[in-house]
Image (cartoon, rainbow, N blue to C red; front, side, top):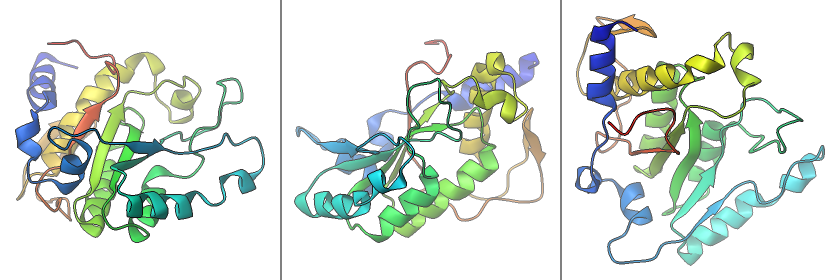
Length: 218
């Protein structure tokens, strides 16, 4: 990254405080003022070679939505590494969140966490904005730089560079969600004369960084 790109990434990667998401139903449900909220993290049981172990999860999510739980979280694990310890979510997180959106009414739909270092920000933004629109602005995204080294060479990426790529992807992602056409110059691509559709229902999708994601506090 050259100096200009670093400044651009840091300027647009810096987070926002809670009032910025006051109009976002998913964020407000998870972080309700002066209330304890509860969510559930999928999968409920570890996959060990039998997909039947995951049966019934969607029905349970429908029930906890009815009972007033705040959020359902799904994991983003592109590849199974048998030496890591568990297979993670197994289902693609965005496809699964769209499926759960159709089976629920109020519960927040949360990615925990979308691996921004592996996926291109255009694809991330397209999937996220689509789910946000279809669900009535219930999507909240945990985001991370990735913790499974085996996945990076499969994408043709260097595991050691995941921190820089994370910052670049977050910057690109946020610019894509802005209204109107914007020229974007990034190590991940150059965009001019086009824009991403749809835009989020409230204009924003809350991003919650998992751990440090190899970023400094500054």
